Length: 232
Ligand SMILES: Nc1ncnc2c1ncn2[C@@H]1O[C@H](COP(=O)(O)OP(=O)(O)OP(=O)(O)O)[C@@H](O)[C@H]1O
Image (cartoon, rainbow, N blue to C red; front, side, top):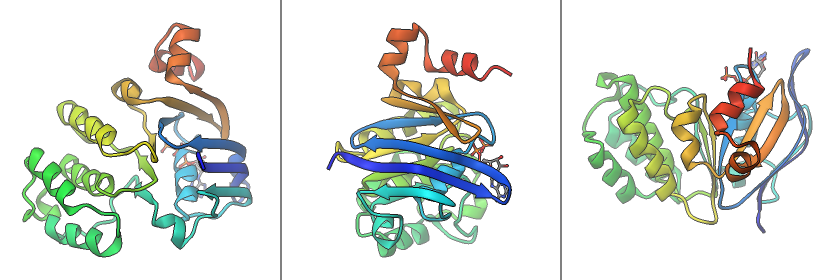
């Protein structure tokens, strides 16, 4: 089955606020997709629905044909907007935690990336900078052999040099059976690794297209098109 994620009339309301409004979306395998939109457009809401942290108000969402639940959590690797690790934890504690929780976690891969970025496995999170904590979390998430990686703002606090390494890490750590959905405002940093983009605004999908098609048909970068579409 090439369809990895399917949203059918997916709607999420918070009280009277409609954060996602009847979204229809198919994400196939083997794609890196940028989920792009202005503040408050519904990106985090969609990612939380995919991860079963929120339930749809109406409509449906399927991952490998299943609604979010324990089975889909086994195949979705999620980097939340904010860290959920306790600050007393050492990197080794987190490695153990991921080994215990996820059958698809590769400790070797994670340790290799930690070493590459000069992060001491014995270091405690409370002693780390914000950017280093983000790197640790992203390394853990990308060291799973998942079907779908959902990364909510993965490179916001990371310096530009490390960003390149992290983006390379994302590209080289997923396989053709998997897809990566990345929510970010740092479009120019990331657009070279993207296959497709989804523009979302006020809970509606404005555009779902390949980056190549945008460059060919619009004659501009994704960043330039985004600024044009969402000009304030
Ligand atoms: N718990 C909540 N209760 C009420 N409204 C909410 C809640 N969470 C989000 N919203 C609203 O839903 C809309 C979508 O929010 P969401 O966080 O999904 O946007 P976003 O695109 O991720 O934004 P940002 O780029 O600023 O992170 C916004 O109008 C937001 O204010």
